[in-house]
Length: 344
Image (cartoon, rainbow, N blue to C red; front, side, top):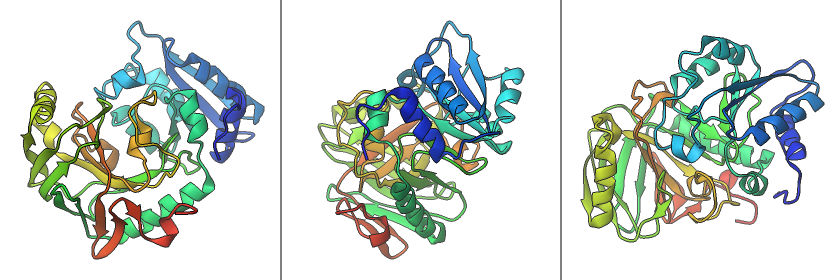
């Protein structure tokens, strides 16, 4: 349930309890410069109260970036080359990440050491409103069980989308807002799952409709934009002024890997709101209940080698999605009973 009015240390303690933190656990809290120092100090206090041993890993940097700035240029960070900090983080049982290491080689190395990781960068009101639950985890994992068996994923919409991914080669990423599993990463808030199709495969067209969202720009489209998909990548972006703006944005990276299909999945968090007006990086749109999250760019989170800095998350409403022949989402409504939110 939403926890409006909870103080920061209390809320962070509840989150750490979901993550299984207790006496003898080693918790490292990673931050950069003055960014989110109030979060870092509150997490350190909460972890100590649970009996954990704590490490405050604060990287001194004159150029510390906010999460909104960093998410537009993924991969590069001030942890690169800092072996002392890396060894401290790898020795922890849990790293709380206030820097946003997503799609970085450093994050992968930390996870490979068996350390679980929790990304926390959203504004406090978002963390309160979208506090995770065991039921959300259950529903996300029900989706994971189906996705693990599937060999194709197809999604459509009334605007003209019809694209098919070949599955089975890549791992599945689940996000339900906490992590108690060694080596596993999660993001608070969360509430969706995704995977990546087979490299070089994936055919069709994706037509984003009016009102669909473009991240990291945090903008709702005012007109349709079509992505022509061939051989697992976007071959053309068609439409009016907004399509031209997206082409210009992607071209600015001067990296052909930016056009590769990245993760694909659907949202299950029924407390998310379809809006770009909320503060933060936009987890409301990404995890929105019954959306399809279509993405372009890097694949390092899924064991790949595409570490392009350009990443577009493109959540879409009112889509239908199939795993093999099973209908999972119909016009934006989740169909399987074990994935449906209470009351839906």
